[in-house]
Length: 205
Image 1 (spheres, rainbow, N blue to C red):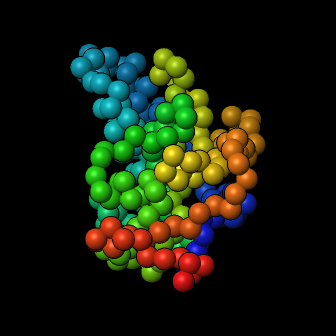
Image 2: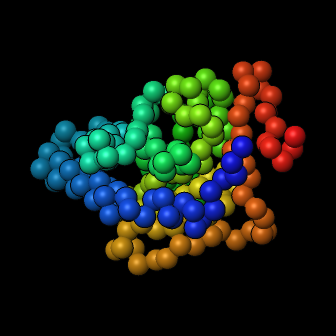
Image 3: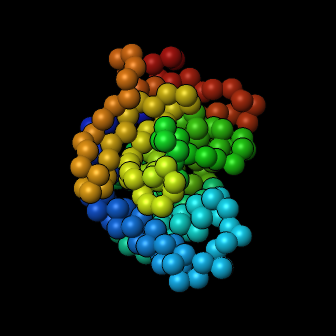
């Protein structure tokens, strides 16, 4: 069973898509702000969650159109995943992130598993994956009052830990960075049976 990708391995897989992902986010945000400027009455009753949903749908639509026929993707789990690497070493979700670079997920068994880098066998089968990939979140944060994008990042979340993150938008002017914490090897993704038992990693067998 593969370990989570290191930051270097993740960057090697994602770097060719950074420019496109950045363009997708700016495109989606520009559509939102243009609508806000030209039709404020339409947007008045909307809540922050509505904004995130609209922006997300435009990000995914842009990405899908630009990778279709070039890079694998799936929506068989009920949401869009871009699949990276010849051996599907990583999958990418597009998310709105809070200031701690954490996505807000609707509570479900599936989302709880993914938050822990764990995959049930039926999830792997539905996504057409043969073994657990590293799940990376490609997401954006907003300025404190929510009027503009502040950061675009790739982040590897693992439960309450965040092994690494790095910026993808050249306008941000930042380099790859790692959250402070004890030095440790990234944990291995897990396969969870329907009874909730963790399948042992190769090193545990």
